[in-house]
Image (tube, rainbow, N blue to C red; front, side, top):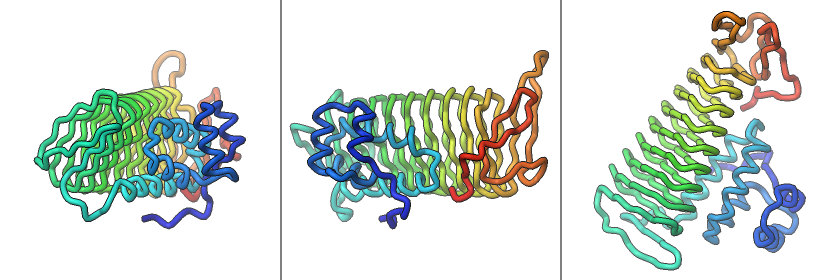
Length: 322
């Protein structure tokens, strides 16, 4: 498991009051974290107690409040690894299904097609080349074998893949998608979805609105067509292509590229990075090209374009250590 970050994201009862959470969640928080707690610790306790219906509130707050912080990506990976650890014994073989309030065991076949309706589901698989079709609410799915596939249409699910070349296709809203393996492929059309990929050479395609996308390793390829997206790509030699409007894009890894034809709200480059950003001059679409180290573009600084399409630094933010 990951070494906890020295800059742990914390929540207190004051934060929960600002969120206007339910009375039940607030009382639960006071019981288990009277003095507050870290994002990882609170999330782990919710998973242990199978309180998946409350996880979305926690995740939504963390992403909205802390997505651009230096320590965010590392802590999100820690949380995903905790989910995998808590789902059961790593030496367990086959597929285990826990359905509340019932308990069943799925056959250990290579291909699974399963509909959960609106029940809770805790599923873990170490098999290779397993295919899962899932629809339902508040489910947690984790595959640790290579070349596994998940197709999901439910809401508020947590879908995790740790093996090599995993594939996830999602159309549900408010889901969390996590991939720790290399060369994973993620396709999403749901709204308010959080996508985190830590492996090398991942490909992510997103068409949903208000989504958060993080890729922390090298050679990532991100394509976004959804509006109001926030994209954070930290690995080297990465490419982020955006056609959505009012998006915030960070490509902080060395020699990475940002291309946007949509109305971009902010952008940030790493060492040796470059950005191609479209704008409309009143008659036609034109492009501005920015290179880190030229024309006062500094790595790790967020910029927006003024009315003359000139970059203006937002000095209160920095991505140098992302």
